[in-house]
Length: 431
Image (cartoon, rainbow, N blue to C red; front, side, top):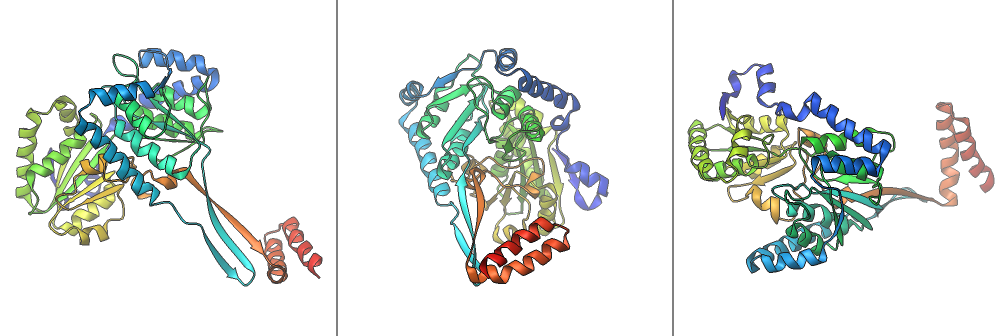
C-alpha cells in the first residue's frame, strides 16, 4: 500500500489519492457493454443466447431451485445450514421492521394530504456468480423485495464455471420463496431484464451489485428510453478504514483483505493519525496475504490501495466524507463522535468488533451499497428500494372554497389558464 501524508498533498494529489481504479471507467469497457445492451434491445432472445454462450459458456435457462436446494442441505454441514438460516432470519427481521408507515397531514382545515406506499410490480435481481457464487447477495436483495410486497421477483446469476446453478444459490432462493433462477450473467443479463427477452419479462427496476461490466450495463440501460430504474451505481467493492492508536492491526488488515479479495478492481484505503498503526497494518497485510486462497486477486486490488496519514481523527472523517466509501470501518476506541460527523458512506461499522463481514452476511441490513462515490446521494438497498410513495389529497367543501381563488391566482401567475379554470370551476360548483 502506498503511504501518503494528507497535509503534504496538493488539491490535485488529494483527488488522485481518492480516485477509483481506472478500470471502472475504461472507454473500451463502456463501448463493449453498450454494444451488447443495444444488440439485445434490438434482437431480443437470440442476441441474449449468443452473448451468453460467448461470455458465460452456455445458453441461459430457468433452473427450478427445489431439488438443488435439497441437494445443498445434504451437502452442507448442519452448522453451515444453520448459519444461512440465521442470516435469513436476521435480514427478514430488519427489513420487515423497517417498512415505512403511511401518514396524513392536515395542511389546513379540511385539506388532508396523505402519503401511501405501494410495492413495485416486477423487479430483477442480479446476483454475482462465477467462481464464488454470492448466495448472500440473493438474501440481501430478495428479502427486502419480498418484505416490500413485490409480487414478481426475477433472479439472474452467471452459471458456474462447470455449468448450471450452484446449489447454495438455489438454497438461498428457496428460503426466499423464489421457485426458479435464470443462469445468465453480465451485460446480457442486465439487458434481458431491462428490455425483456424471450421468457425473461421486462422489469420495472434492476437491483444488485456486480463487476464494472454489470455496473456499466445497469447505468446504460437505465439511460435508454423505456429503460428500467436501478437501485444505485453498485460496482466493485470498496472499504475505507479509519483507525486510531487503539486499533488492532490484525483486525484492520483482515478487514482490508476481506474487500480486496472480491475483485482486482476493489479498492481499500486506510486512514489513520497513528503512523505506527499504518506500519503494523502493512506488516500484517503481508503476513496474512501469504495464506489467502484468493491472494492473486487481493494482490491486484492492493496495487491501487492507499494508506493516508491524517493529522487527527476529525481530519480522517473529512477524508472519508470526500471519498464517500461503500463501506466505512471505524476501528477506534470511541466511534460514536465520529459516526455523528460522517455524512457520506454506504454503511458504517462502528468500533473494533463491528466487522464488515458481519454486515456482509447476517447483521440484517443489506450489503448491496453504493460505490464509486455514489454514497454522497444514494442509499443502500432496503425495503424502500422496492416501494414507491404516492400522495393522496382529499378536500372538504370548506377547504375548496378557501383554496380555489388562491390556486387560480397562482396558475395565472404562471400563464396556465386551464389550470386556473379548473380551480374556478370548483368555486362555481360550490357557490
